[in-house]
Image (cartoon, rainbow, N blue to C red; front, side):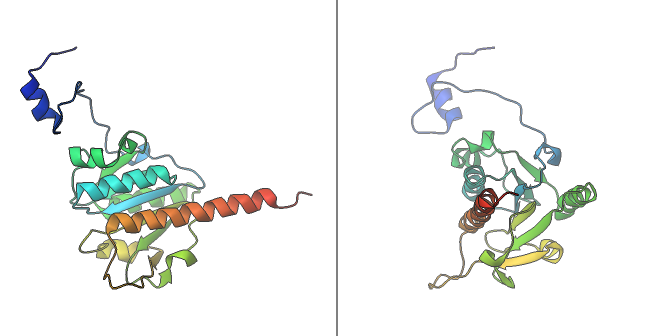
Length: 207
């Protein structure tokens, strides 16, 4: 069905200074972890309790650019469908499966099911208290990459459940990195490791 709206209403619904020419009303996808593709090299970003739609949108955009299979938002968090979140993804929202889970345990139960099914998922959390530098973490296999809340970091539930806590070394005067920046750095490192691994495998002599 096509409806014609008054320019004033189009401007209000569009949420931008210049009114859009077209608006669409669509159904949202279900919050179902089964929407995320599973495979031997799956990489999934878990964003724990994000409070900024801009940061969440940026993480989804980086996940798309750097080859992640999906994004999971856990706990009390900003709405995945907030217009600011969707705009910050610059279109990646429609290509990367992004779902909300009520708790860390829901995601851990899903990961446990994958392990029982033969997918050796590792859970790596980003933390300023991490015992291993990010570059020294093996991110080549199936991995859940956990990024914490902008102010509080990852929750205790996630910290206690991670197989490894990784830190990003900093040398300047900044006390911390933006959550979206941290996620993007970690995604790049995972992408780099995987590309190097594929290059070495392709160059290996064949008998």
